[in-house]
Image (tube, rainbow, N blue to C red; front, side, top):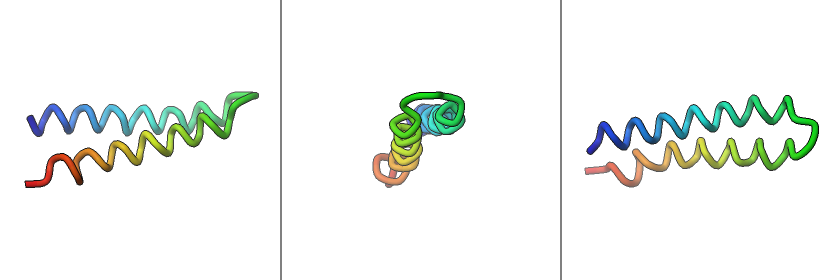
Length: 54
């Protein structure tokens, strides 16, 4: 179960990084996309810290 949650949180983290880069290439909605990247990265760190603690 820990491996599955690690893969999910790592995928969310990479998606957040991708959103950071995408925000700089857009001509509109840059701030919401960048903020969505921040939320994805925060969620990716939240999953192992809160949900997988022993």
